Length: 400
Length: 141
Image 1 (cartoon, chains in turn yellow, red):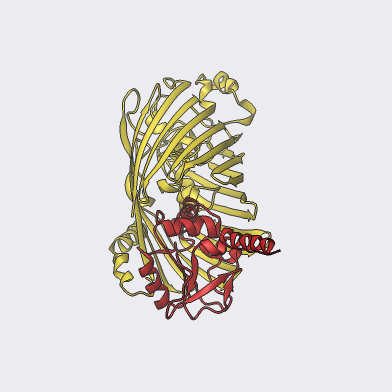
Image 2: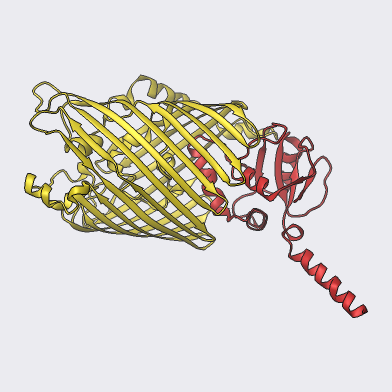
């Protein structure tokens, strides 16, 4: 539960969005509506061995994974698009916030021709980060029930989702393919329990607040059905200790360059993303020494549409919390905590069935070695986490 | 000689049948749209939401049939060279992130024709390459 999420302007925008008249009211005139509403709702079922993921899933089935969204877009002028999404999400102990405003932005396209356009979007904006981040909560747009946890860590999702700020963007279509770029500045959201877990190792009594973040992404879609992408992110936050806090007023820094490559071959889609996020902590005092960690995160994924409405997915996902200590032995020697909390190797097999254009059913199996991205709030006891664990998931998703 | 000419005609007929333009959907637009033909590349850019304006800077309004409609499947695969599920992925990615509006879905070909006729800048497709009052048919180049 965070303060900013429920603060004034967020709830105001949320109520405006929910109070908007339905889209089908606008479809009566044949000329096409100026505003539209779309949405989705999904329920998951999760079972695990040895550790917990999104609720009480160990040797049981957890139904604490629910996603629902209402998305609206309104184009009052040809050059102005206003869009936003109200999101309901429950994910075990890691996300209990329920209903929230996911984003609300205005996009002003100040230059448009048939082959080139430039625009400025501002408000609480979606953050461009790799292939899937902007629609990570829309089940239909993901490659699995869960996204690769190395690159799209659900542990620090608040940081990557959306934030108040502005992005300049442009796109162009040419003979050599389509290119687009985004570059912008936001005030990132560090103030959530899960982000505190991943940066400060635990939930802390004080307040971790975002100071500023720079984000940029370049995308190039080649005529050969290849997509190349480069994402850069640099975010800073500051900690204000509570009274009697063990930690001093420290600073956190997150910097990442993420590479994306996707090749589409008929019914086959091959995707790889690679990043080396760098986490820096400074000024927290003796209880949390200054440190710099180079994470390594990568996955390789194949999706095969073997029938028009059936898809098989195989993925190998690798995550090291510290490039210089991949097996976690140094960490274990220094802290006495298990070495396997420094890495995670995940083999995933997934099946998707688009039963109708508006109903999708999915099944997924994970075989995991390591606990590096295990959600902290679901597994508060660091010692009792187990290195080898398996997970199965089922999900039904409906859209309109 | 006559036999050879017959064979040649057969070959031409076969080539016409096999070419994507003869078999697949007809592209229809509102009469306000300039030009008589459209390239496959432009059509792909329009239907993947990369091109949002006609060359005269009029906004493009895109109409589609449901994902599992046979005419949509034929249009996607044979004319655009893209599977319907790939189009849907592109539309979802851009519309849910607020970067573009997804094409407007209509329930059948009659509604498609009615909407294209009534909407300046509209583009759509039908199963037959026939002319209709108040709608312009574009030739694929």
